[in-house]
Image (cartoon, rainbow, N blue to C red):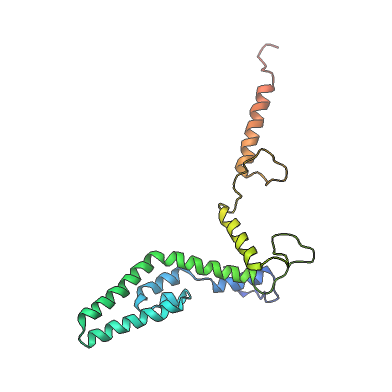
Length: 192
């Protein structure tokens, strides 16, 4: 977000306010990766909101150091291997963990706050008789089936009530119409 936009006071509410607050709460890729080398301290786990991992990693590290200091080197090495293994696993999982945290933060921002639909609204928002958690789960499952924000292709030939054709589909239809028009036009020769 550019600096002028960050200076705007959007505390009155609305979508801009939600987006501005959300931008400050989302976990940044650079910060996550900058904290990963300090994995024995669990700082990357703390940043990603994993309290258990943020407590367990430093305790395991301290335990390994304490055992080494006490002269129990083989046990300390085993414990250090566990910490190192955890760090390597996190190396491969860190982007997925960050994405899950950000997805949860987005859901909290946009679905939280006691938002209710307007009177008579019969859209995707769960009705009073429905379980809100089940409705959100069904909506999330539907969105996961979609690819890149586009609906999956229709299977039937019925276009009534369907989605708007994509730009590529529209171009294909226009090319077909142009071919049909060119085929229907009489060929004019040079001698008329």
